[in-house]
Image (cartoon, rainbow, N blue to C red; front, side):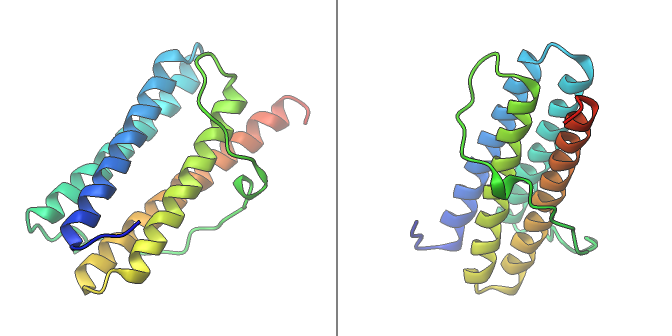
Length: 153
């Protein structure tokens, strides 16, 4: 992946966020259980916030002024999973596994962009997005662990 301008990088990141929104919206529509549907809807809203943040950054808005950076624990569940493809009607645990992998990749994506951004404000934006994706990954891994524990696994 090669970009000539920071605007190209941001536009690419916006497209990735749009894909994430679409994934979570589709998962929520197809999920038969209300609590699982709500979980995916919440993640879709979070990804929409990321998209809006990046769009704001393109407009020159200061988007990280009040953001609190903190360390997010990585329990690394997704590190041991293989890549999956979304399939209509896939089980809740499979949807969680897929979502964990997607968040893992989004985290790596923003970490890579952060390392190569150059501009201080852009570095902060990608650092913030990395942290947000790390939060999502942790939340999904925790949901997965809790669900599997309830199933006796």
